[in-house]
Length: 232
Ligand SMILES: C[S@@+](CC[C@H](N)C(=O)[O-])C[C@H]1O[C@@H](n2cnc3c(N)ncnc32)[C@H](O)[C@@H]1O
Image 1 (cartoon, rainbow, N blue to C red):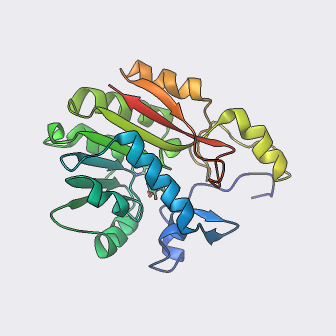
Image 2: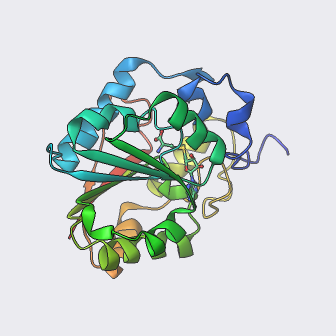
């Protein structure tokens, strides 16, 4: 790999190289290689809480939940959270550190396969996909949005969080002294960059209305990422 290429996606192997309790390091929520501070996490949780308007009767689906360190902040905000991730290792960390039965459940699966096969989809009322949607190949992303609309009739709101905004990709790479690299690939450490209108079109095709949200300026990635709130 040369310095001009963005590193490959490695969420299946990389987390195993980090200490078992380096939760933010495992999911690369880092600044210059160090885990982000609590203030950054608090901003993320506040955004999720406000966007999804969670109450204690909500059943939340956390798609690509990773090690559930972020999920853990939402457990007290709703009746139950079900986290799904295709990394058996990260789900194992979730089970070891963040499982609070009966309020949590964790499943190892590809998100689209899970959504197609969940036996009681009507139990869910809200969904979250934080820092992960850009890693889904477009075919998977499209399937996810359609399945959520078709099979999960009571999911009224979905938050797709921390999406890389293609509008700012050139500036992102310029600041790092590199050329924009594979912006349309889900297999880099950033995944697919989309302008908000592209994301909204994908969502609309599946039946969702989209509101684009930004994070406070103090959020470490606010300059090149956005969130998308999808409402039925
Ligand atoms: C940056 S981590 C984010 C984890 C968590 N949502 C958070 O914000 O802390 C991205 C996660 O997406 C998961 N992932 C990527 N593609 C997936 C897929 N097709 N099905 C399930 N999980 C997937 C990875 O295993 C990884 O845990």
